[in-house]
Image 1 (cartoon, rainbow, N blue to C red):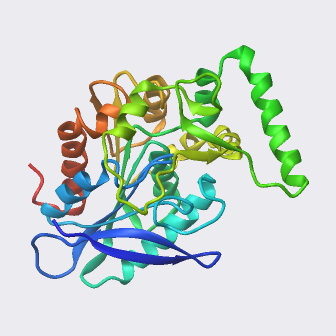
Image 2: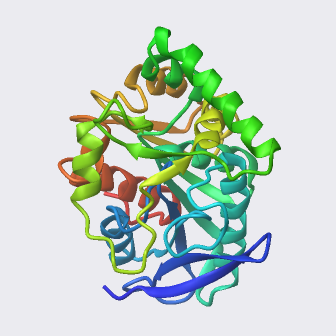
Length: 304
């Protein structure tokens, strides 16, 4: 399926790079789905398959990369501010509304991992979003950090955050760290073989920022991010949560506890494996759950 390439003007004079997939069939304005990847994720890593499946079922789909990543603009490269990403996503929704053939009253949002948290926040705070699907979402950055950072390493991490702040006070660039590395001598956010295998499974086109590094301050901001606090405010909009049975990146038990706080209408789909299995081994289960949810609530009469 052919994707249109779009550049969307965002605050600060930058542009966000996006794919638009037109609905494969349908007459008149069609419902639409807006999508984004997680923490340092690129749409090239697994999102095209979801978008194509949704478009084949009659939805228009827009998939963007966050600022400072991929072909999207922005400086500092690899810098992640969740609230800046949410503000940019609102701009993408506004842009989506201007496209020909879009039913502005039938817009759904799909976010995964870090962007799964963004989908929760936007679902709770943006009236234009009518249906929410959050896949393996972050719900508490603070609680996740307690799981990921060993107690004896927390003081060193806080010292690094302070060192980074001091360096920026002196006018230096923000400190950088690898997204993932198994080498304990390398500063990295994650020590995950599964994440490395996931990154290596997808070919990134030449000229696209591969996002191997993120800023140290991105980690600090992620530890302050609590999208689960918004989950009870999504209703009465329909909420789907797709949760991996053995997720250690966005821990399963935290996601299930957040789901319990959500109000109806809601649906939980538990898939096998860990965080990164959602995109490949469990793609059929994760994509089917989302597609059925969108059909039920954005295309009445088509849901089986």
